[in-house]
Length: 295
Image 1 (cartoon, rainbow, N blue to C red):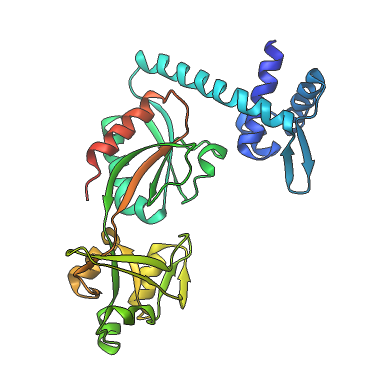
Image 2: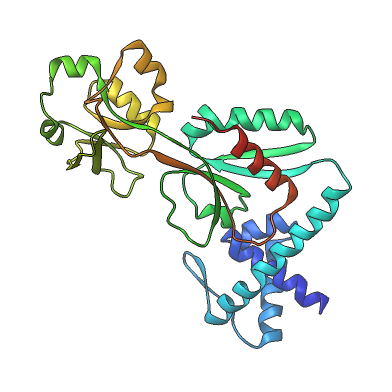
């Protein structure tokens, strides 16, 4: 029984990490031993669990069944052990936190710094990434994500919301004056390639009017700081978060176009896997972020 539990743990780690090599590193064993564990588990069940291919491996139907049954069990075990330890020790351990580079640098890392001063025995790794896929695959504990969440298998808590703005450089606007909303649809645009509908938005007026618009982006970038730099270079218009361009707005370098019309505010969520137990230091950081994230 104990051997099979160890083999199942190895199997879960291989699937979560996405490779036998990464699993071996995480489990502090050789890659050959990982393969032996998987083969022994398959032999004991008399069914293949993983099929190797040129890209790595895929799970068989039996493998998916085993993974789905035991992933939550092992998560519960780790959470329970962590909670027992935390009850009798100060807040410590290792937390892996993820967010976009821009939001991490501007907002999240300063809050993490304050939290670590309160809990000096806690170790935190920050991973700059906008994908939610790595939340499980790379053992990320908490991910702060901006905008609408689409994955219902993940749990989340809302931290707040922020304004996004339709902007361009003052120099560009002086050379390309806009007299009507319709003209923004034919202006040169810089779009965020990370967004699903980066070229389709709706402006809202305080009197209740709406103005849906689409545009064909002339330029694209997959980071907000790159888009900000492209606006500074006078390449055209863009939609950017207010927290990222405060200095440029205050200095007059950037101009918000048609200020009576606003774009919908965007949510800030802290996301974590759907286990019914969350470790104590995860809960503590989530609570701290909820309390201290202000826009």
